[in-house]
Length: 374
Ligand SMILES: Nc1ncnc2c1ncn2[C@@H]1O[C@H](COP(=O)(O)OP(=O)(O)OP(=O)(O)O)[C@@H](O)[C@H]1O
Ligand SMILES: [Mg+2]
Image (cartoon, rainbow, N blue to C red):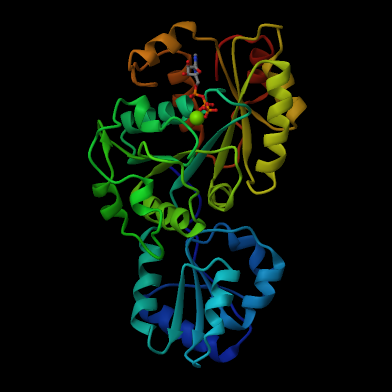
């Protein structure tokens, strides 16, 4: 585990004193301290950080109107009043479960206990290209491989139905195991261990990718369930993002701790990346730019990042031989050296301070020189 944030408590949002009493009693039985917010405004600061959010049925409508970003691990809690409209409210707030009390009391106690077992929430890193062929999937794979090589339990998720399939990067398209079409209809909770065991392994790396069938738009619920499961068992989850920001993608962006935007050092790529950046920053808090060389017109990494108004995570020096090595089936990040691997190592080490841009003042000077990585 390599995050240092103080362990966050489950959040309960309700203004209903009776529901509050009931849930406090259950959290005491689970041995868990709750953060309580009386309404969506009070909940906002802890909404993303909490490992689990319980939403009282009394605030479901106002929460929907508050338009907090979608996240995984949300449970709508109400009393069993034979009111079927609660399911609509659950959908409205993006809840994966409805817990109707008193029947669901044992389940809720177990769920609360499990949420704090997790302790520190593990990290999700999303990678998106500023334009087609930017090198996003390659970087996502290299990050996952580098993390695995430093003993982090890692999962690589290919969330781009229109990409070439990240399993192909590993030559693993025939590896046995589940692909997205097998689990796209999943709703509710998936066991983290079960998911890891069911996925194809590329070496030691669990990879969730696509089959060779028709592209499929993922439902938001499937993405939430998978991310929930993945973060329960992994130290790091790397998601190769699509540039089509559908509902599933919005879940990833809203949940990711960091999103890396990969931009070739070219003017038109920067212009295209500006559009992607606008969409991504609408949902993701921490978005950083990775500029990839070569820079045929001499465009500086720092200028690309400045144009996009985002912090620079690093510059990937041109690695002309890498494309050929990838074609021959070499795994990105597998060599243990080179600009791509070096960037991944440095980035992962710096992730200990979530929310901090990797580039410091001294680094920015080196980036401006287009020299090396960091
Ligand atoms: N760091 C790199 N150094 C050199 N070449 C690279 C690097 N990353 C990617 N490439 C080259 O660019 C090609 C496209 O890379 P990749 O598939 O990772 O891009 P992408 O952004 O995921 O593309 P898509 O738009 O299809 O999702 C690779 O096949 C490889 O030839
Ligand atoms: Mg790709």
